[in-house]
Picture 1: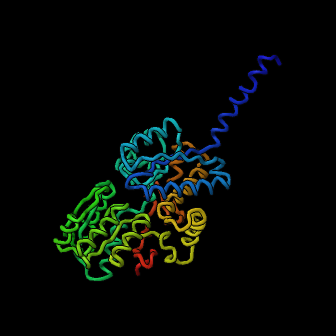
Picture 2: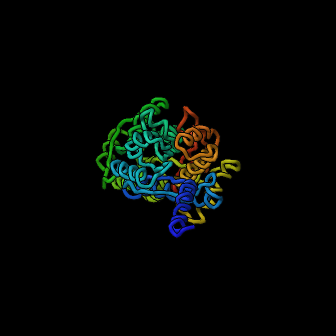
Picture 3: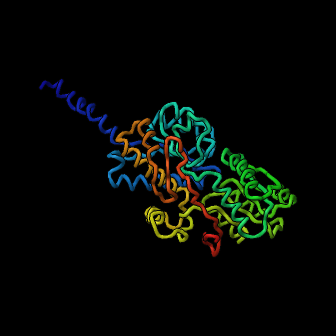
Length: 378
């Protein structure tokens, strides 16, 4: 071997090794609101992805591929979401997205993500267009379940039949508000007022005052984050000592704060992982405990709602990629549609070619804060 050939031999060997090394990594991208109104929820989603990635990587990865998470903060803003999605596609070569709960951001990015043939596994609702929905899979309980659970509680407990809606301007909230009208008619409940707020509003007394003046005995709040605490404090400050506040699915932190203000007059929609004692023995309890054991070992008593859905999303990705024996976008998308009966930590998931919202049975319950703990209302 000449000096010249011996000089290039390692480079040639490296060139042949590089593709194999690249194929051993599965890059999963996450557009999440680590700052802004969605921070409490999306931080949980990010940490749930991370916990699941560590768990799967310790077992050899997904179908032999080590998981590499690429996480970008969209600041809970749709325009920022577009920027970080494009960055992860162009610079990081992400193969699958497992993005957070900022629906508007996922909507804005969906057209060009779908055009690129990259599956989107989402904490949020699905984008609107059929072409985008083909590539998107939702791990969020359908909005109707949140509305039905709260209104059914009002029917089953007490005599409140007139309610007010207080919602933020997100796409999810707009869908929920429309559904609230339909569900209220079905259940014989009257919506006497519908008000909106912005996520950064420091006071909502005016909107709450109008809801009270219209004769509502309860407020169905649609929206997440610290605004729930603001509403609870405003209700107290206005002296509305009989007004109920029923909050959306969210992180435990605002629930605990709002419950400290309103006591039993503050109620919320909850998944099993927030009130694990309410889940009977069986497959659902076992799946929940698998997640919660690892979650508590790392994060203690921190809320596991969004993290549990992220864990489930990663486990479904694992099943799909393993079944496809491929990380090709179209192959993974097709395989995701075949995950037709998976019991996760949060719910049982049933996807199909015509069903990209995985939760088809209502897994939610009503909760209340007592002695600083989230407990089920029976």
